[in-house]
Length: 228
Image (cartoon, rainbow, N blue to C red; front, side, top):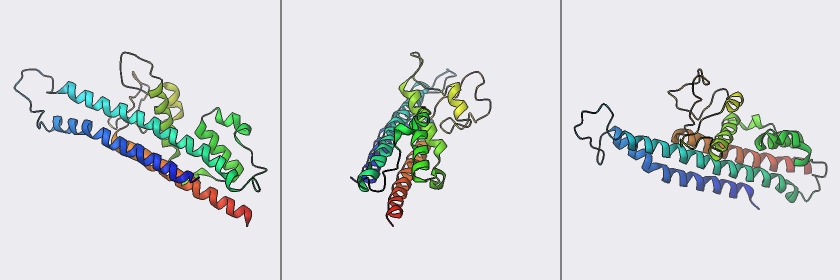
């Protein structure tokens, strides 16, 4: 089975779905900000900006969609890593993989998260240093965190999701927050709200694709080197 093909196809589908789904909300915000139809403000003595509720709803929808697509993207990466490991054994018919340890030998690493577990396994068993991939691994770790926050919300009173204190101990400078917030005093008063904006989601898709391509090519090269 061509694991790389199916993984990239899944990522491409999620990306296409995200771009189509997010467009109406991005466009609604733009029209409101530019005061274009159907959001032409009428005279009002209120201090509240016109169509504020509609703008906030669209902004919230962008965040929720980003978090849900982050979840789909994380699932695609996890499936790819699982299948890649199994694929090494299938391709080489166990001839050069007899001494290779699998997930059971790395329970302690997997307890720190599946990305950490697979990273340690591939580095120790296949001598593949993930830093060589030039993938932004911190971004992917944060992607998993926002997926977890989206799947396990803590407050019924709000739709938004925020990083927890434990999250901020793992990711000291979050990427998926509002740029206006910055990374200073993240724990002051309220934790930063997760803001997976379209331009930041683009980076998540790009880094996921880079990891898939790098790992697949590296594992194929490892197999050829063992046979040579």
